[in-house]
Image (tube, rainbow, N blue to C red; front, side):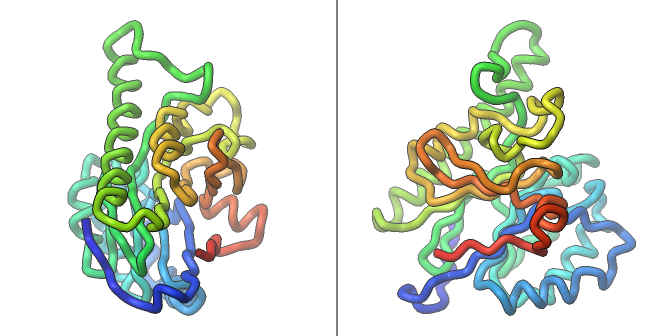
Length: 251
């Protein structure tokens, strides 16, 4: 748990959110102006996974340099692309700093706002969600989503037990916790887009809003069964459907 002080607690905070930036080895200098602009328009930046394109450390090194142009605190999670080369721990370590917080079952408080983050995982939604039955490989697949949900629950519980009841809590993840923000993707791949198992702690812990990515042709906005707003901020969606470079949420 980290606490970052700053700003007036009575002033509204603008949170910029974007996912799936997929930084490549050839992107040196490409993102500098982008991150400068985010710093001018918002108070906190959320990066919702797939920070690198193929999980290569050279891509993470490029992103680390580009992020120096961003003047505001950054809250991020890793995505499936960041896991591609099994270098996720090194990527997390490389990117983390006093300004950049890569969450994996942890939480951070910035300007009196709490953020809990996980990668998440697949498994499907509602009554079509995969069950813990059959071959061991299927059980392991389901267990990964269960473990991610438990990590999120622990991070949110830590925020609840260590801060005042009125602390606003946000969740950052890569995979989707509801099917509504996956709408637009082929139905055949929905089990790999997210899992309803991720939504239980979100509903129970009274989260303000959720930001995720991963579904590049999904839908920007949905809500859980408890009315928690969920935003799919995958950059392709923001650019193609809404002509946005990032989504702004004001709290």
